[in-house]
Image 1 (cartoon, rainbow, N blue to C red):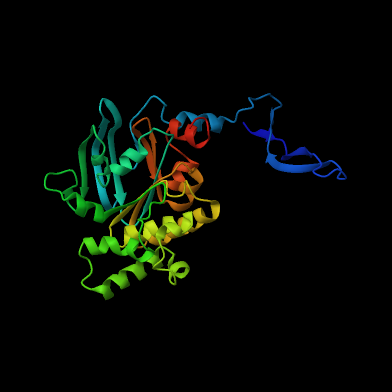
Image 2: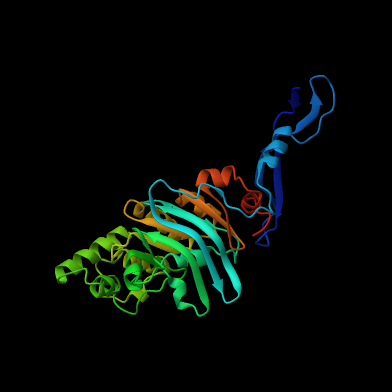
Amino acid sequence: MATLFAPERRLRTRILRLPRDPGEKCGLEVTTEMTFQIDSGIDLAGQEVGAVNSADTVAKSDKVNRDDRKTVGEINHPDPRMTCRDVNVWYGDKHAIIDVNLDIGKNEVIAMIGPSGCGKSTFLRCLNRMNDTIDGCRVTGEMMMDGNNIYGKGMDVVLLRAQVGMVFQKPNPFPKSIFENVAYGPRIHGLAANKTDIEEIVVTSLQRAGLWDEVKDYLEEPGTGLSGGQQQRLCIARAIAVNPEVVLMDEPCSALDPIATAKIEELIDELREHYTIAIVTHSMQQAARVSQRTAYFHLGDLIEVGSTDQVFTNPKHQLTEDYITGRFG
């Protein structure tokens, strides 16, 4: 049974703009314009039909129910850098991460999204054992990298954190010169045999972080004297100076202005050629711009994982759709 649809209609919203100066007149400003289509509610036989399109009803019924906490989507990756199986995290008696299984692929950007307190940052910190520094934190499960369980006995945590670097929410350069901020890691890990090697690492790292042209004449100036966006790129240069395999980013742009954020996002896309990147973000727009895969967390459960396009345009789980469309979070 075919259904007639009314032609497109436009809705314009106007706001009365009050005068800023005594001699200025009031004016109307058009702020938004939306185009939408209305179901006429009449089929070709002249019978009334429901206003809700039946295809929409079918699509909704295809979503996994909110009460189903099992992960939907493809947790596996054909070329994984890290594989996580049955990961659980407790803070004392609080079960923060519940049976999470996820692969992180080589040379991909995977975004972890979800409301505050959902466990995404906790899971991210598990990937280089940063949770070890928190009293009362207990982690179980298996996290494999290069054939080794990073939580296994005998794992050198210092070496692990060189292989899995981290950039934090707020820029935290060392109280040293720009040069020493970047040179510190390679020096303590013995990655450079002489001063020439150190200089080469510093220059390469600053170039990859998109900061070299801005600081090349000020390398002996303190890193703390840079702007917020420059400090965050300096921290990224510091992280990649030890040649890690994975770079973790915990809301790296939350304290930055839009221009600095755009530079970091461009940088993330460029760094993907050399590193695997896992990023936690509260900005769904940012996740959509920079990542190839997206993992959605809710109350400690990994609810859905899949390609970023699929998760944002056609989520399989009702909770994912609720979060993306702004029903909560």
